[in-house]
Length: 527
Image (cartoon, rainbow, N blue to C red; front, side):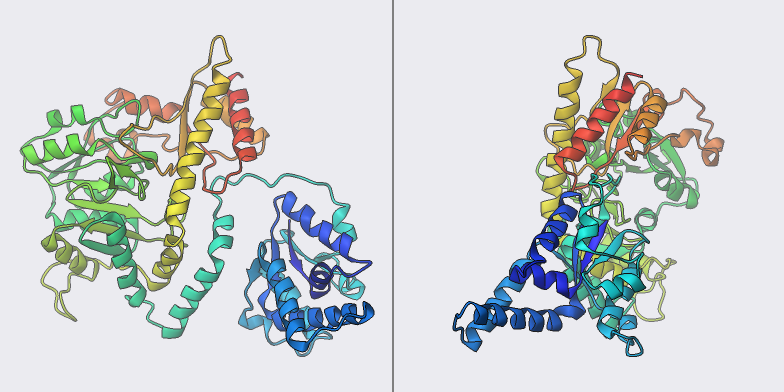
């Protein structure tokens, strides 16, 4: 449970006001220890400063200490800065302003702000007994909170809440900027984001689009892929990869995967090339790039363009180069669960080719090269400005998150493999293999087990979420039945689909979380 500080509790802590300081301070410390967050309401700042200054003045007077007005102001702000240094700011929203019919407008603002959270997820920490009587389900006193049982914070499969806490000021600033200028479609944040992303990847052009799925579609449209053409790809991926090929009337030609990385096996691609092949589309799965040099060599030999489906690998590197900058066109997704995600749908395309960049920009805007002039057929594929503003805020901490993901993925592997080494007859549990020339952003931390159902049950019993990416390879999806690739056509992909399981992954997992998950999955594989 999170806590929102009432002014009286905040002042207790800032001024060490007796006899309330110990209970108030310990309640805040206990909340943080239990994995909760402490919030300060932005609308309380002026009153908080005034009351803190008044209380400090009384303390100085009682102690017979002479302090100038300037020094008092500085001391007040110093203790408030210290209070706020590890807390989270809760913005004031417009609907919290019209509270003048309330008995206490300031208290009413705080109570209304709690409605933004899930019921029971947060309470107002206050010493105001009347407020507690009026809102018993929304308030708690320091003494009451100290009597609650300690419990560890539940482990999220993907922790977006903690990330949001880190970037909340930038998020709010960026979103409000969009709300004020009102350019919700193709606003200035779109160009700003495209420039930053192109620079990050190290390519000439970035074209933001409405989602990762349409990014693949636009890329293929720009390459002129049409009905009857063939595009080589992997069957072990999300359906969007094959779906967009089929949507154009083209034919997805599947190639089995490397059993270690789960990416397309480059040694099997050339045998799948025919006179109808018009592109190769490898998927950089689970956060690690496919073997792009080998695939590029094959593509160049046969005069074929390559599209990297990098929806899960943005931020990863291959031989020192960034994912999305390794092929004719790089494509990624900003779906919320991705390593770099927005709060809705979004995506981007990357290329060094000026002509392809121009065509892709036109396709995403209904095929227009200038207002109401449409030389080609396109789609509505624009990314909206609010989502761009959100990605810009996340991009500021992305390097740190990429580093944390790599460290957490490595730690997961160390914990699991270390425990496995103590078993005389180790059950099947294979941790991710990262090629030595690669880095991974661990979009998922995915292991392969021999008894997935038992493992899932053990994780559920331990309160640990998991997922399967992906349980049915594309050749066995009903939508692709016409390709006549029955079970057994791609044995490596089909075996992986039956045995992989993804564990909680985010840059904000604690070592306690990693140990808890590792212990639970090791228990599960022994069932």
